[in-house]
Length: 205
Image (cartoon, rainbow, N blue to C red; front, side, top):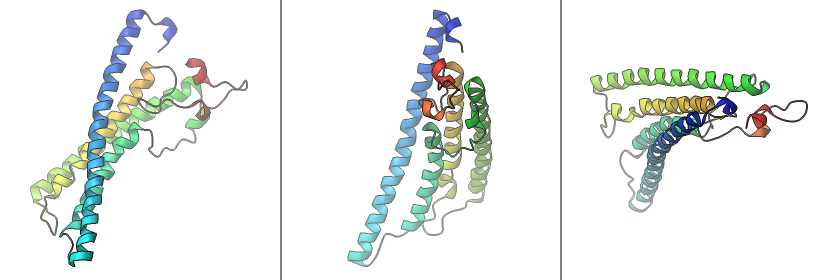
């Protein structure tokens, strides 16, 4: 969006939309941090209690390793959205890093929208998988926990990641500069410089 051609009404509308997106992002962040942090803390407590039980009482907590494996599944897939939020995901950026200015920003938007579609497709397929587990009544070997409950983390994680990529694309459409995520702007040191030593994103900002 060209800010020099924007009317005050356009700026207010854009600002209001960005505030709404940031509020949604904060809400999703609370959900992600609660799920990931709770799973990590519970896993640490459980493993510690299991070790203490083995040392002092000669018997640990039954099903500890089974529960740990389930928590790792939850942490891994919820962490997909968390990584996308902070732009800490793995990226194949050899071609992207050679671009600058509008071309660089356009490619980033295309990448974000394409990745979002892929995440939502994975969400759809993982829902099918969870429903299949539910129909078959599969449970864990030791504690007989229904596996569909654990693997619900897959569609949830893919949905959170897809939303993050959509938010990143919207941020780049609404704001000057290049944004790696909704809240993280690309640093000038990461943007190729022109012959005069100035980056295009610096001029846009």
